[in-house]
Image (cartoon, rainbow, N blue to C red):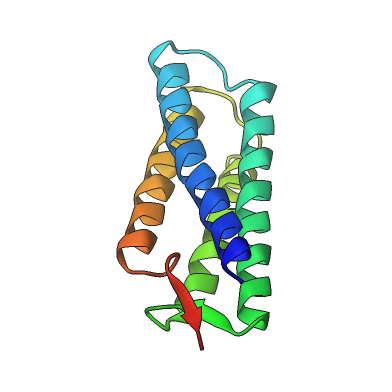
Length: 132
């Protein structure tokens, strides 16, 4: 069971760094007054997929009888659902806009998701996982 917890931790760490990278990338786009490219939109889809896969691994661990040490399983699931849908949701709310304002919105949300993910670690929602 420890191996799957390690995989979950690795995926979550990737998610944290990817959130930070998306935030700084969007800041750079906005600072240069460039349009949000299809590359960035593709990166958003990868981000959502990574968060979704991390959630699925977490659900598998829950099915195996593991849970976060904090015991707040519902909070973990809600946070991971948020992280999975919010960036594509911003794209949808912006209706495909690719201007500087959209880049700022992506930057704020990317950095917010980064801080949210760090908060999840601090609150022991991600690691360590223990037998229920």
